[in-house]
Image (tube, rainbow, N blue to C red):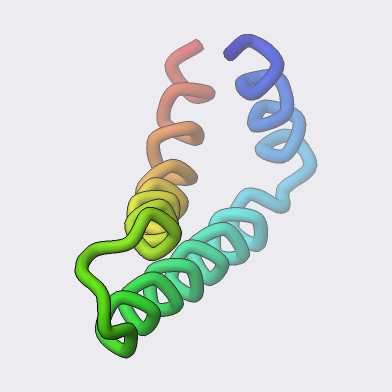
Length: 74
């Protein structure tokens, strides 16, 4: 966890936090949409891969804001 906070602190110091945050949010949105698409367009029930994509997409949508807030307090 310390390494992740150091990377976030380095990004915040370089002034690229807005770009990195939106890039991670875009990747999270794409993963979320891919998971929902796989889940809706398959004939089986909830599969493991779509569930992981949906969960990972949600984490990537929320994580940049949380990590930057933690870096500011640390």
